[in-house]
Length: 393
Image 1 (spheres, rainbow, N blue to C red):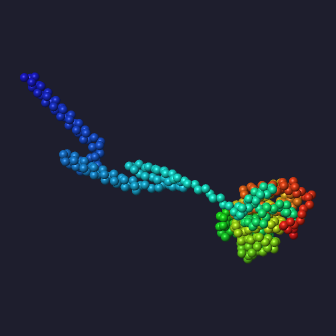
Image 2 (image 1 turned 180 degrees about the vertical axis):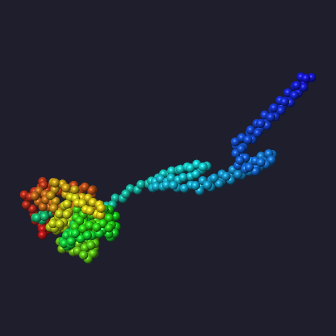
Image 3 (image 1 turned 90 degrees about the horizontal axis):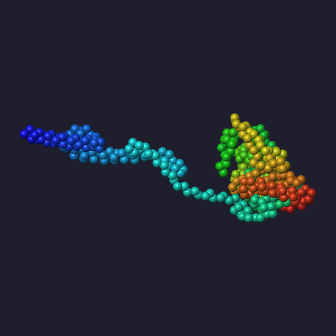
């Protein structure tokens, strides 16, 4: 009897334990982190409602609330997108998602277009196809004995081309012959800034220098603002100065020459090798132009600064050359240009090189001519006067 009762009690106790374990498992599953997160999203009011109804209501409310929160987060993320930096080829953007900051960098594909080579007037005219015995790189060349007028060498010497900063040789000659006060102060203005080619200058607007120093910089280092200021401040103004330049050219017999401004930046300043030989001869007769154009270097004080300027012609520093007057020039329309009076093999020669291709090619052409003259046209050989250019005067 006792054993039967014990078995009955044990069975009942066993069933109670099973029921307790089952309830505990259900409670554990219900209060898991996922379920807890869902209940938390619903809110405190849903959690305190009746257990039977709250479970279905919580699921429905949690689903609706989750969609609403996700939608708000997407809108917030979209609004957070913004470009934080950009360059020519790179774009970086920042975006906030789920409390995190994401940075995206995109590279744009770059299509490089090759630069179109700008041909000089001489190249456009086909002058570079002309062959010569010295294989010069200049499409135009002329070598004349200054004393006998003998033409030692010529190549396309009648061609009329832009002359770039060779223009400044006439500018310097006009200013020097006017005998204006060298110590008169001239201020660089906005009118002197190059709007033709956009060339740079260390003479800032507002800088003030004596006329003599501006003339030195224009002839020695081809300073564009200095040359323009000299023409602008000439008695009567720039228009008067340019008209005097053209009148002087006509007086020298430069029939194919035209000037429109004093720097040479305009391609409308044009001349021929024959005309330029006449100009070099006239410039050589002016002591000031002779001295300033062959100066190797010069310093000027501008305010609190001291500026160092150097010659644009490296041959001036070469002890093998005896140069009396010189000027270089370059713009894309004119190519590399050079005019000089130099003593070679005992002879005073005037040399003109126009439209040379390559930065150092005009210097190379001058060296070729010098070696050729030393070998074949020494001073002992008599010259033939006046073949085509008369530079004596």
